[in-house]
Amino acid sequence: MMTSDDAISDEKIARRAYESWESRGRPASDGNEDWQTAKAELEAGRIGRNGSTQQRLQTWWQRVRQKIAGEQ
Image 1 (cartoon, rainbow, N blue to C red):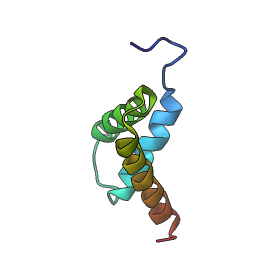
Image 2: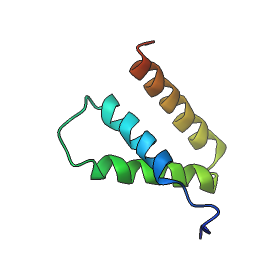
Image 3: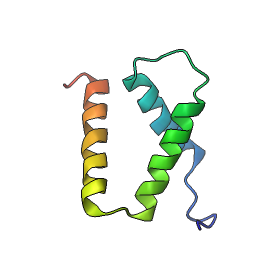
């Protein structure tokens, strides 16, 4: 269980959710799905999933950020 010191800030969740929303082409939605996905991903990173899963997630996010920045 996470304590308040371990809690992920709404700002971090919002940034991750926005990146996800943009990477999906900015579809019309209320953003709840992106928010929940972002929160789950950030919490999973805090838990310290196994190295290969964590590495795949980091690689994927790096590609998303590059695509958003237009670096393809």
